[in-house]
Image (tube, rainbow, N blue to C red; front, side, top):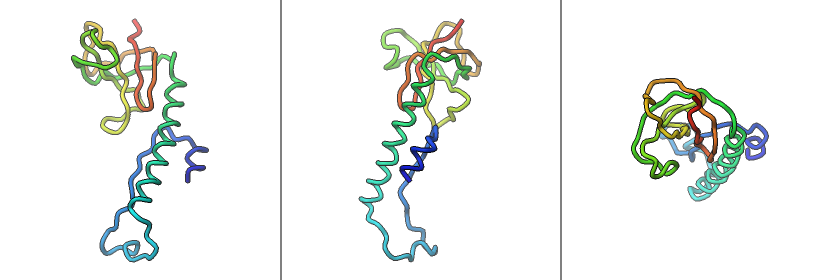
Length: 133
């Protein structure tokens, strides 16, 4: 599985450990692995995916992207001491499950509007950009 994930290099992957469901054939199968082994394997998968995601996001640095402004907030670890900042989403960043794009919120930035940003930095899941005039 790890080789497959590395070869395909998905942009995003979600994972979970297996849980027994009463009444299913799988619940009756012998040879179940331990919870600790399941958690260890999940962590290995997610570590690999974090590295893949970080590389994919790093490849976006310097590019221009259209984003949808999601919200304006007052505090940000990325723009400390600069006042408000914006949370925006690219076409590939779904609400509640994917990373976001952090923006220095310029005057007039409004939730719901589409703007162009230059990606300046990246993290495993998030992008940091600046508004392009």
